[in-house]
Structures are given as C-alpha cells and as structure tokens.
Length: 305
Image (cartoon, rainbow, N blue to C red):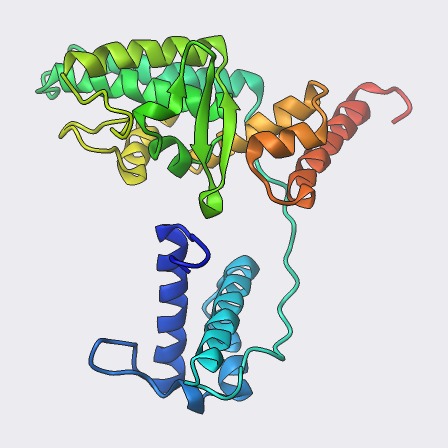
C-alpha cells in the first residue's frame, strides 16, 4: 500500500487494523512479529462470519465495505506471494452502500465559524486561567487561517495541515495541495483567506520559525507541525462561540465549499477539479444537495406546492 499505491499513513493504519481484526476473529490471534496467523486456512465461512460479527457490533455499511475491500486486496497479495491458495473474500457479496447526503453549513453559519477563533480569544483574554496569552493569541490567529484555508480551497483537514511553506503563493493567490494517493492539485485563495494567512505568517515569523520550502506551514506551540487532533480539540471551543452543533467537523466546511459553489452556478467538472475527486460520480452527490435545497425553497414559497 505504501510503496506501490502511495497510500496515506491514515489509510495504511485503517487497513492494518482491518486485517488484525479479521485475524483475531478467525484465528483468535492478531498478527505480531513473532506469530503469523494461518492465513491459508481461512475460507468463505470465516469471511461470512466476520461480516455477521461486524453487523452485530453495529458498524456502518461504509466501514464494513472498507474492511471487505481491505481483506480482499490482502488475500490477493497473499496469493501472489504464495502464502495462500484461495481468496475467501472473493465471492462475498458486499452490502449496498447507502448514499446519505453530506451535511453542510449555510453561508451565514460558515461566516460565524470563520470568525469564531478570534471571538474565542477575546472571550478568554482577561481570564486568569490563560497562563500564556501569547500562545493563546497565536493559536487563535493560526486556527482562523486554517478555517479560512479549508473553506477557500475545499480541503480535507489532513491536506490543510500537511501544507509546507513552499506550497503557498500568496502573490498569485493559489497553493499546491497533496491529496489522496499523493495526487497534487492547485487550490485558490480568496481575499479573506489571503488576509488571514498574512496575519498568521506575521505571527509565525515573529517566532523565528523556519521559512524553508519544506518547513510545515501550521505550527503547534512546540514549533512542530500541528496535528489534526490538536486542531479538532480547539474546534470544540469555536463551535460553542459560533453556536453550532458539536458534531460539526472540518470536513463539513469542505462539503459547504462544494455546495455553495454549485448553488452559485459553478459547473460540476470545475468543482470536481477543485475537490480533487478522481471520479465525477463522487462530486455528483453535491448536486443532490442543491436539488433538495431548491425543492425545500419551492415547497415553502410556491402557493400551489
């Protein structure tokens, strides 16, 4: 996965976990450096039993589909390496994936969220519990830039936090994104995002952080790359300030980006390019959101609806 498919570490961790879960279920032992499960002894009954086990645990169809896909690929690899002679997941019928519409924020809700980091800073500025005010202000300015960047470019949170200094071109108002499968694309910076980034870079430079092209753009208080987990901890505070639900994730800003573009008349192919989707069918889900919104407006406003 890492060497041939250029998969991300997140994907590799998920696949490794899926394979270990199957080994634990089928052979009552997880893979380890000293103990290799008897992969070749698994048959279709083990595969079906594993899927029943996952259903009983209440896993979503999407998660089950990913695990089936991971194990099917894993057994293809084992067969190529002459470790197994059959693929127990080859004849398994995958459960049909539901297609729930992605949740998104309104334009007004997005504006509240983008303003929230600085509002949160102002709300805690005078509190005695804030021991390092410089660090708190730096985090607010940095997080405001991250949110602006995600919404401006339709990024995944991992894409935003993996940016390096050399990926930004503020003069041309574009930046380079490395998406799934290490595929690169260009994303645009709107004026508010440029302003937020300029504010952040001034604070970053004041810390004498590296300006090298390979240096991480977004830094934590230790001067190393900010992690998604750290950012999402701060996000909970911003959701409170913006009066938004706590289940709101950075990914909903990406959904909002696509929905707002289509609502404003952008063509589907352009949105596909901006999101970095390999297939147009993945992007088409956002046209359903726009259609549902239009129907709701029609039903509410039309006298004969």
